[in-house]
Image 1 (cartoon, rainbow, N blue to C red):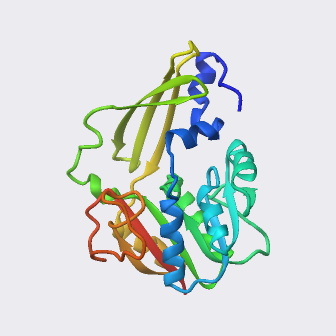
Image 2: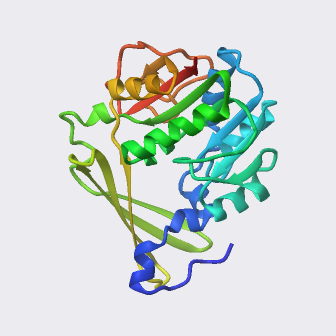
Image 3: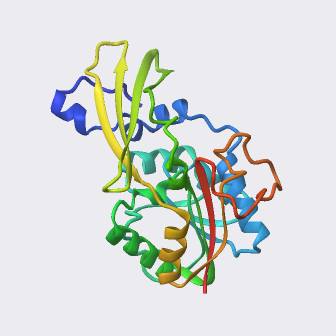
Length: 273
């Protein structure tokens, strides 16, 4: 993949360095253990779910490909064309399609499970977007199908500021260039959003990129109510262990306490009834 080119400040504000360059994304977030995919497969196997799986917000396709190798018939869906092109080339097995998880229609296809990892569900910023997401999932699922999601936990930010107090600085080297990111988080309480402002600077003289994105902060009771409105029964909603927790989930490990929602991640298993 070619190195990002110098761009104007206006272009720089709207670009997303990682989704525009999926190989750089995988260098920045290596996942050799495929822990999220393994966690999802463990949940699906434990609930004796059928083979047809839709991975919403599949990104570079690493988890979708893991589920495919586990014997499942997987469709990976994402909004980013560069991510999908990378997935088809580097993580074959699933079928990859372009779709917006906030409102999607895959026709007559029917799935036994919809998987939504890495906070993808939280790109539903408004109630209307959440409604169309859940309605789309309901239409895509077979009766008794599962919705499996892993995301940030809105309840964690009630009284905690450790993730907000100071910018996070990281770096990654790729194709002979070192990229340094400075990430600042803040909470928009009125919109119920966790907002991220990230500036990328490279040591090759290209124009720095400024990127803004956000996740909806959802709370356990809010999630239960929204799911119930669309015919879902929550089977499990807990903070730990999971693929992004510390310590991370290990094969076969069960939730420590289904009543807890105190950590910074939240894990959801719901059945369409």
